[in-house]
Amino acid sequence: MPDRTRVAVIGAGPAGLLLAHLLDRSGIESIVIDSRTREQIETTIRAGILEQGTVEVLTETGASDRVLTVGQKHEGIELRFAGEGHRIDFTDTVGRAVWLYPQHEVLKDLVAARLAAGQDIRFGVTAQRVDDAETNRPRVIAEDAEGNPVEIEADIVVGADGSRSVAREAVTGTHGGYFREYPFAWFGVLCQAPPSAEELIYSNSPNGFALISQRSPDVQRMYFQCDPHTDTEAYTEEQLWEILQSRVPGTTLTEGPIFQRDVLRFRSFVAHETRRGRVVLVGDAAHTVPPTGAKGMNLAVCDVVLLADALRALLLDRDESLYDAYPEAARQRTWKAQHFSWWMTNMLHLQPDAGDFDRMRQIGELRAVVESRAGSTYLAEAYTGWPIQESIHR
Ligand code: PHB
Image (cartoon, rainbow, N blue to C red; front, side):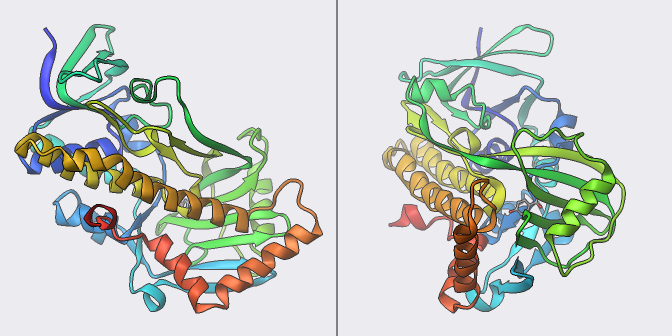
């Protein structure tokens, strides 16, 4: 006998867990499954920047108070190029801000909230496929950690299972999506050291891009542009510091032991379809952005806020209008964020085949942004996030 619930959610990342939380607040029951263990979910280091709207959703719905106490409010970023730093002041230009609060901390808060509310989250359960999307009883076919079959029948199945989504096939079939791969990646490090700067520094340097970010008073996150095939062990710690240092001329980085390294591929993807019948895709299952604009987790949160509204109307009031409007409402924001992420990426990175003209043009573009109130305001508006409900109220 399959388990039965109203909403079956594949994936206990930010999108899946937040959706379960929002649905629970309206009395809508769900089951969330994830192939990973709770510990894996809560310790994997991912993104770090939350838009103001994301923070409002988390705090106003009781999902996280810690974001305001442990997280750090950032009221600007620095763009560095041609040997100089230029601050984009978010407060001054748009009266909004972002918070530096690591994604795994958001996940810890959401898992704790779900378990405290007695909600059904199943770790170590791997989805294999989704069946019967176009009926009123779609089903998730899965397997638990011991290899026993698991089947969940629901009113709605939500694929919140990331860029390698298993649910996606039930929605898009053989139609993939819009896709772009970039000819570079980020080499990311975590180090044990005090912060080197108070705010994030996005640096366009002749040697390639670097980002100086933070995690806490004694752990820092930094990245530099590298070839996508770079091996994480290709450099000694000393070499890593040398590369990072050479890409932020003007700042002396405070060094410390590097305890994690990773290489992040750069891809942009938007699924052609994000809904079929009663199966819906959210977050990275529906779209991937390169990390430069810090939009990934924030887009997932926006999808889920829209979808929670749509599912409330559908499941509690039998009103299908928001459910029907969901794909287009989510898509409009997704493409704005795709553009912003692509723009930031191209403005800041060194293309492998760039000539002198391209490099000088980039500096011109950066100057046009930082020296113009309109340019800086656009960047600040997009970085801190467009209002979340905007698209659905239109
Ligand atoms: C991070 O701190 O991991 C981070 C910050 C800003 C970005 C991307 C990643 O744009």
